Amino acid sequence: MTPLYDQSSVIPIRFTDNKIQVLLITSLNSGQWIFPKGIIDNGLSAGEAAAQEAYEEAGVRGNVPDILIGVYTYEKWGGTCQVKVFPMIVNEILTTWPESEERRRSWVSLKKAQKMIKKKELRMLLDNLEKKWPSIRQAIESV
Image 1 (spheres, rainbow, N blue to C red):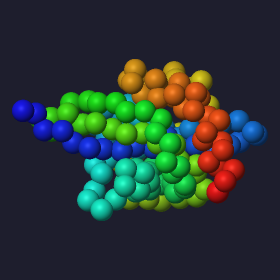
Image 2: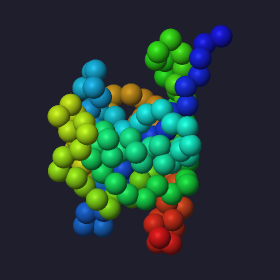
Image 3: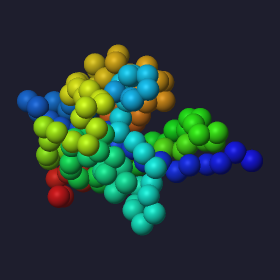
């Protein structure tokens, strides 16, 4: 039986001129554009773990509403990683962060992100983000 690894991820979001932008980062191995993600450490919720990864990998902090954008799987470490993805409303952008020497980051529109991301399952998450926008917006306004 193949092992299953629980991971979580965020799609970091900010507003510029009343338009949504998302933050993409490069993966360590292939350099492809992705979202911050990692293993859910013991004692952390999926959202808290994803927020920690966003700090370490992308140098951003913010609020992670308990709104699941989607789930995807991929193969790694001889098993299957199952990734739960949440939105993150960014309220702090750091100039240096733990992985700032190893990754690039880029704030882009949803349309540009669709073109930059090669993995189909990640592009589908952007579609889900748009569909769930009313509930995300409601969560933002209640903070």
